[in-house]
Structures are given as C-alpha cells and as structure tokens.
Image (cartoon, rainbow, N blue to C red; front, side):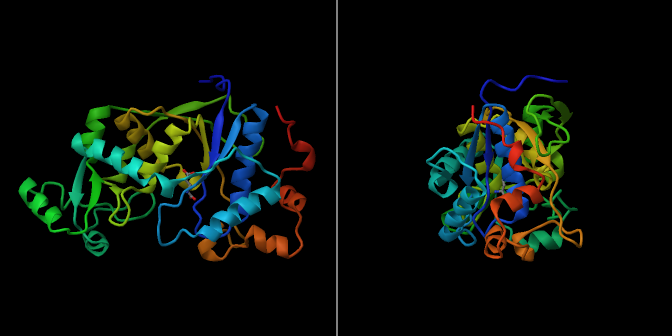
Length: 299
Ligand code: GLU
C-alpha cells in the first residue's frame, strides 16, 4: 500500500528533559528534521516533562541548546507537557465517564509480586486485582484520599473499538521519505490494563502523547524502535478518544561498542560532552551519516 504524503506534513521530536541529549537523540532529531524539510513540512520540538521528579528546567534549556548547535530549527512556542496537565486530566475524565478506566490502589510492589507475565517493555503485566472492586468500596477509598491510579480496562476498550490497524513506513532511516507506507494490525492487548493516570500526575506518557500528537496536528510520528510496541496502544487510545491516527515511522536505535542501546541512564556520551571534547556539529552529522551536502534547501 502506498499513499501520498499530506500537503504539509507535521513531525515532532519529543524528548523528556531528564538528562542531556546523546547521539541517539541527535540521530532521531536529524532523521525527522530532514524528512520534514525534504517534504516541505514542519518539524516541532515538544518537551515531555510530565514527570515532576526527573524533569528539570536546565535539561529543557540543554535540549534547545544542543539542537540549535546541531543546526536544527523549529517553530515557537514549544509545547511543554507540564503546562497541559488539566487538559490530560479532562481527557482521562472522558474515558472514566465512559467506564474505560477503573481505579487501582495497588502498589508497584504488589503488582510485581502478582504479575501475569510481562508487557512489551518488560514491565509486570497487571493481574487485574482492582478490576472488579465494588463501586461503594472505590468511592469510600477515594473519599479517604487513598493514592489511586487509573487503569485502562483493556478488554472493554478493544471490544468497543474493534480491530485497528497501524499505518507505518517500513525501514525509515536517514533520508527516509514520507510517502510510501504499509499497514499492520494493532495488538494493544499485550499491554494489559495499563496505567493511564498515574498516582503522582493526572496523566501518563501514553495518554499525553496521543493528545499532543492530535492537538499539534502531527501527521507522521518519527521516533525510535524502542517505542514501536507502544504504537499498538496509542492507536487504541486515539480510537477511544476520537483522535486521528498519524503515520508511524520507527528508526533503528544507536548502540554503543558493547551493543547496548545508548541511554542517558547508562552514561552514554552527551552531545554537550562531545562538544566540550572538540566535536563540531559537522562531526556529529558526519558520524550519523548526514553530510553537509545532504541538507535539503528550505521550502
Ligand atoms: N518522550 C519520549 C522519550 O523521550 C518520546 C516520546 C515519543 O516520541 O513518542 O523517549
């Protein structure tokens, strides 16, 4: 299957400001920026800072600084998820009113102990302990202010939407084009009853990301393969909330010399570190396969 790119594709790069960017982020940003530029589209930066503990303002500034240094540009203002918590809470309210969410009082520890297998990220699959709690018990526990998270009633959600498909661009890497795409069936069930509203913030990565992609008119989600499985859940949430489905393109992940995926948590060398060691933006681009001559002209 193949379909033309929309007249004005809109892409986004959506880092979480919990550390400095490394080469893997630079690859993702460059892949998206070049694809948008080549198609006469727009590339947006979005700051995914819903986590109040791990997100830090100095990392937001660092992200903008690193991307500018790399030679990338984007329209402003930049959407920052921490400014939109009320909006996400409202969407969760809609899902809750339609009984697609249920209250869960379980601790992380108890879920790990009773896990019913693993989700695609390797996290314990929720065994459904709170799924059928009597309404009066839930009301009483909520009234007492017990910490609560809200989970998606996956079976019910899938029954309501019926089978869904994901439009994607296979093998999307540097100089990937936005035109040709394929489609595959979505399999959200393997995520089980995921948390859509966390105990500490009135949203979750999965909920915020589908709302923002819709609000920003994202036509193509270009991101790493580590988020490919999350797409199955994202198209389900889009269907439940009546949001459009973007086309997805998941690029390869950069690995270090021991074959491990680059990660801030593993101390992978940051762009700012490379810069301090004397690397130029051209060195980074060349290292990632983007030569100076390959920059398409501005539309
Ligand atoms: N904020 C996510 C991350 O830093 C990316 C989300 C996305 O591209 O959908 O891994």
